[in-house]
Amino acid sequence: MRFTDIFIQRPILASVISLIILLFGLRALSELPLRQFPKMDNTVISITTTYPGANAELMQGFITSPIQKAIASAEGVDYITAQSSQSVSVVKAYIRLNFDPHLAMTDIMAKVAEVRNLLPKESNQPVILKATGNSLALMYIGFNSQQMSNQQITDYLSRIIRPKLQTVDGVSTADILGGHTYAMRIWLNTEKMAALNLSANDVVAALQAQNFQSAAGQIKGSYVVFSINALTNMNDVDQFENIVVKNQGTTLIRLHDIAKVELGAEDYDSSVIFNGKNAVFIGIQGTPTANPLTTISNVRKILPELELNYPSGFEGKVVYDSTEYIRDSIHEVIYSISEASIIVILVVFLFLGTIRTVAIPVVTIPLSLIGVCSLLLAMGYSLNLLTLLAMVLAIGLVVDDAIVVVENIYRHLEEGLSPYDAAIKGAREIASPIIAMTTTLASASSSVAKSVSTTDCAATFFFKSVLSRS
Image (cartoon, rainbow, N blue to C red; front, top):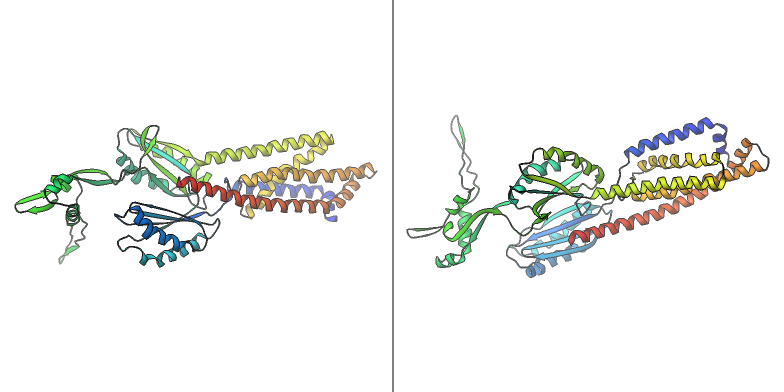
């Protein structure tokens, strides 16, 4: 094979081509996304249905089971989980890895629509949501205060902190966990209600009749327009306490006569404890196409700015950062690459015994590892644990080829040929076997890496889904 002759006859051309490969590789290295694993589309579609007042058995039999059976035949569904509790049914369909999430969402929506008429009429419309990406948040930030209640912390996070976090590039949503939203709580005194011959339905009817939003419209004259504000809704505890529940002759039974009214939380079913203190967490979810490392770096950049405006006694701290493990893993693999390169160079020197021979792997190893980055970028790959591990294995492949060529040239030198003629003849003889050997090993490595990548990603997705459910 004579194409190797030109690189021996024109060493400047060979040097220029090597520099071009190096420069393109360095440019691609700065643009390659850094991830823990290759990009994958793992989608979870949840169908949430509420039926106020229904127990778990009723939810399971009349809502959860029909929806499960309907979506089981949807295209792309890998497996289904379901949970029935008081008044709530949640069915989750886990879609196969890298299956089109939009196609799966459309098919599941059609299947749910088919059984909508079979569900109880009193139940609410099923809510179908699609989540593509990691099932666990990239970061959790805990907030607590010695001077603010849980409701006040939740309100501050909802109005100030969460909107700013959601504007960060790469952030999909910032979910509030363990928060208690403000709500007017009415604690009924059943003994007083029984004495006055009142029921809970009477209280509900009074609330609906005397506390509602009204769009009264406008009054228009020849030259003026007035907007009408009917003030039909109530805003504080005193107004709720004075609601008339029942009129018995000359006696008005008000809400404060039969109940305790206070401004509390919508529910008290969940709470978050951090370092022994009640806290509220915000979970940062990344978009499916976002680079987790870049996204969390952007989030950390705005945290000092948010801290400057915290109320007195308000504290916020990052309690979990998934990218720390990713960075440590990648740094460990990069360290292994450096370590492997040094070991290879030492072994070559010990067995061949000349500095000139050692110079070959010193040049070819970094040139090959950096140059391949341009191909990775062109093919849409990323720098992750699998591609970096492949580079560790490729070090031996690169050095093997170089040693085979050098040994063949030395053989011709020992037979009496000049260095130039030995290089020409030795390179011609070994070029075809080198290409065949490299192609075979590269194809085998690619197949193994692809199967390992798919298995590892599937296992990672499975265990994350198990952890999220537990």
